[in-house]
Length: 257
Image (cartoon, rainbow, N blue to C red; front, side, top):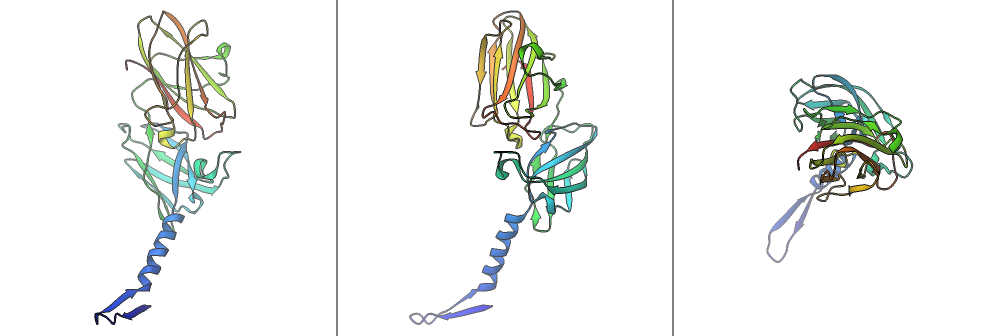
């Protein structure tokens, strides 16, 4: 519909298009109802392998296709999936889409993006957290205390999950006096609801250093110089004692700053 309004003082005629306004409103609604990808389960993708991943987010139960830039993806299924207790749909999502993803052998971090396509539009591109050349280790339960700490090589990148409320993941590595070590959590920057807190302890279980948020991100980065030879423990928890199968992380323990 076109509305015509005469402007008497100037003699000009102002023409406004109501249909254009209606179209803008419809576009805004479509954008609101378009799929949104928050994070993946598991959080870390592996180059050179075919793997099944679950996308968590909003409106993913309407998805008709998942496109992969730098890889191939096949949609396997979709469903409503309410978030866990106290997580909230705007953080943990309330729908899922399962995909079969195959990354090329040479896929680099930051090179692979996923886009979920639905009848109301496409999601913003989601950049995958891709495994790099750092030696990888998978979390093994139980590892919730010093006595059950999981021994990992140094350096390494542990791929794990804070699987339940009040869960603690503990890792042990051997270091030398004077070694400069960086401990970094990769999680929230890739959408994981995990708000990580890391602490490093010495062999006597005394705190050496701890870190929470870093550079405005919930992902802590901690750099320290080891005070003596021997084993060290790294504990990782959620700062709010939350947890669940979506609380994935990559814990990198490396040399240098």
